[in-house]
Image (cartoon, rainbow, N blue to C red; front, top):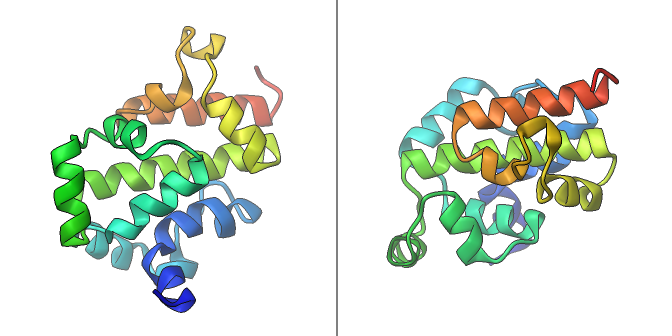
Amino acid sequence: MSNSHKKKSNRVVRYYTEVQPQESAVAEPAAAYGSPATLLEDLKKGLPFDELVALQAILEMPMEKLAAMLGISKATLHRRKAAGRLDVAESDRIVRYARLMGLATQVMESPENARLWLSTPKVGLGGAIPLEYAETEFGAREVEDLLGRIEYGVY
């Protein structure tokens, strides 16, 4: 696979974890897609499997563990890999975790610190681990809120 194909195929994860953190934490991926509507179209089609691989690489997490957090069974994971595409719900969860990694990287000032923060229990989440807490959109918003409080010294 050529390097230009990799950049194109994992542009969602790359946007949220590499491009966007230097900008605003609430910005939409217009730089990668041209508009939020284009991202929404891609999500409805299902993101390429490479997006899951890119997220796994940035989180430095075993694929089996990440798949379980995303609600993807081993059998489904193998089917998605063979098909080369994720479904809509899985794609949405990929964006959720990429968004959290990007925000945590911005607040914690490095990907290493972000990974550590996202994988250890937090008092502000009732002792839960942020990545596990973010298995639902509501939980992800709570993690984002906690990161916002940390960033602005309200925690």
